[in-house]
Image (cartoon, rainbow, N blue to C red; front, side, top):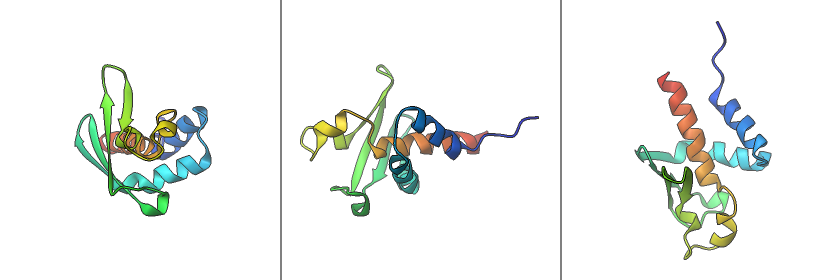
Length: 107
């Protein structure tokens, strides 16, 4: 019988394969406890000034038709939104990690 894989290690491996930095991964892990699932395709991530957030919360939505996550930090009226739309933000990364951990806990 094989040992179940650690979801945090799986997340780290996945993000490294996608070219994300260790700093990005660390920030996502710090945000893990800030994620609240609203529905199967929507989460709220509490903002943290210590991580450079300007707002108290961010909304992450999974677009099932496009197969992509969107975060409110990428909205046109938000600071640095253009830069953030070009790659995955740590709010989305935290939601992905949260989903992997939640799935592991329910298995």
